[in-house]
Image (cartoon, rainbow, N blue to C red; front, side, top):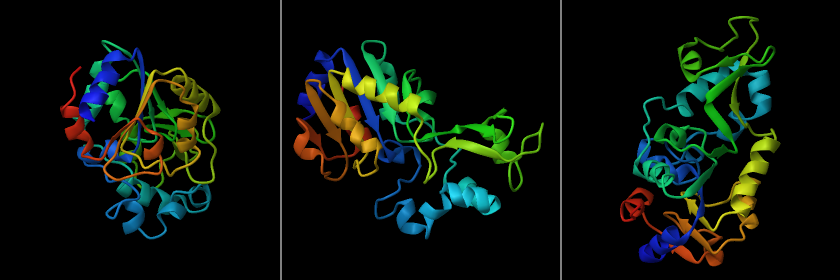
Amino acid sequence: MINKLQKAIDEAERIVFFSGAGMSTASGIPDFRSATGLYKNVYRAEEMLSHTFFVHRPEDFYEFYKEKMIYPDAKPNYAHEFIAKLQDKKDVSVVTQNIDGLHQRAGSRKVYEIHGSIERNYCTKCSKFFDLDYIINSEGIPVCDECGAIIKPDVVLYEESLDDTVVTKAINAIANADLLVICGTSLVVYPAASFVRYFNGNDLAIINRDATSYDQYCQIVIHDDLVETFRQLKI
């Protein structure tokens, strides 16, 4: 299957990589739904990452958020770097469910973060921007240094809608791609998983440690370590 994926990459002009939590586990960021993932080890994780919890219990929200969702020392791994380097030869876009910003740190330029990013934070009243360091260094609830209102991470919480502009750009990229490579996601989170249905290109590939319900629709299926798989590919 590696040879088949290599051939598909070599022949494609427009490639989209659709990445999930498995893309960043090699960077030291735990996933969500595996046996050792966040949702298996933290009781009420989905509730604590909800809009309701943020509004009504912001101090508890931020205590959990800073401890479990922010990994400031994480660095892009080989898979991130491979995708970024491929931009020099191909029209490459990234559609990611991840909020860690590692694709951009690796050098990828066209990245559609459908669940937002920990790197961006905004005042809920005056919309002033704050970087990740401001959040990390704030004690308790981060508040705006101009108007005093609470700051919210630019992350899509449970009960919130996806950004229409980002969704449109992500779907357009997928719809116009020759090759779509699904990386490190079991495609169980909706509506993000439904974006795959817009693909009309030649080859649909999936690289994921475990089997998924989408395997049957893919021409290329690789169940292996994601980073090691990318190490076998040539740019």
